[in-house]
Length: 77
Image (cartoon, rainbow, N blue to C red; front, top):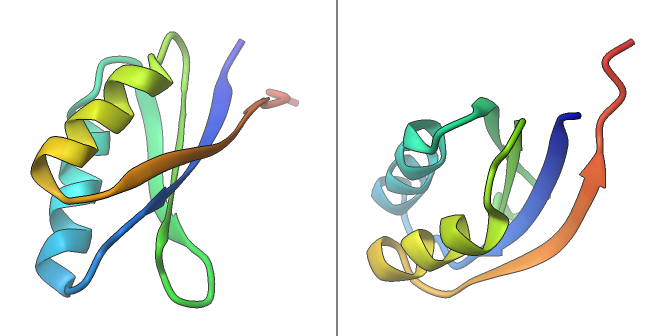
């Protein structure tokens, strides 16, 4: 079953946002990556078999502070 992972990521500029989206897209099993929130500081990743902890570690190394807000199941209907 697909999971929706919502993460708060410290993105100070457009380059940081672009890098965060690239990291999310390169992750195995991801089917959707997007930015959410009024301040565009949340990254949404949807996919099957995605390791949320590993993804956050990669974001912290490349972009800056990142934290998992929620992991929920997605209905395929």
